[in-house]
Length: 180
Image 1: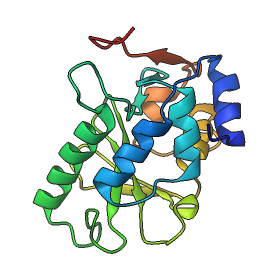
Image 2: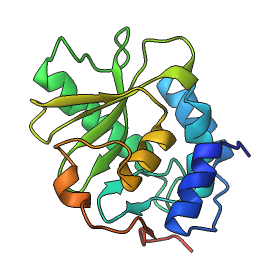
Image 3: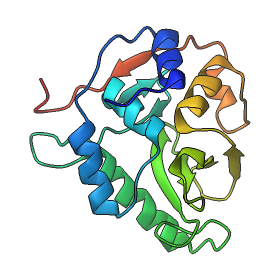
């Protein structure tokens, strides 16, 4: 199982002690997408199931449900289709060179992507957009660092600040049909 200090800090911040066996599911997603995913993401999805951080951000798990669907793949494919339809040449969709690959979303319709241009996934920044795909922002660190810094207020942005001000960092796993 992968390990990442930001994931450990995030788990401590939200009081989460669980783990998930997601290694094979991540490898399956990587095979399906044709690209290796960042090491911190491996650690993140091996620590947290699909769920909600501070009732705002959800990171879908790659682990398949009883119906055989991977929440991560399903949500990524949906977000990629919307991005491709928008034909935003400043923010091309993966697999275009440097294309955006979604890894999370918010309850308000924001989407959080990796910019895949760097050959080392550990250096992919987080790029995010509003629900209309018209406003954009970027965070230079990893997905796990982004979550930690957004939940602690170390990183703020007008897109999500109104939803997180005064909210204590927490994590609530999503109850999914077929999951034990």
